[in-house]
Length: 135
Image (cartoon, rainbow, N blue to C red; front, top):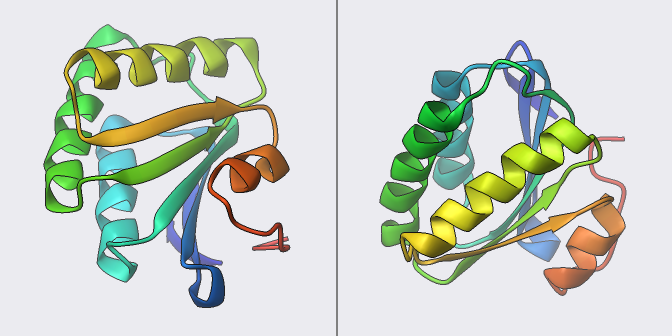
C-alpha cells in the first residue's frame, strides 16, 4: 500500500483492474477528496473498493456528505458507469455511507454505489476475484 495521508491509502491491482482505498481513523472531507483524486489518477477506468471499516465518522455531518457528493459527481462525470463498493462495519459508518449512497442516487450521479459488511462481498459485486490486497 502506498500511504497518501496519515489515515488513507490506495492500492491498485492491475491484473484485476480494481483500486482499493483504505480509510482508517478520523479523516476530513478534504483528505477523502485527496485520496479520491489519487485513486482516479492511478487508474480512472477501474472499479473502486472503499474500505472504511476502520474509519471514524463521528464528526461528519450532512454538510460533509453533501460536499463529498459534489466531488464524487465531478469524478464520476469523467468516468461514467464506474462502480464503487463501500466496505463498512460499524453502525455509525453504515449510516454515514448509506446517506452518501442515497444522496448520490437522489442527485443522479453517474456511479453505482453499494454497501457491504466485508471486502469479499464487495469484490464479488464488482465481479472481481478475491485476492489479498494490502494485507
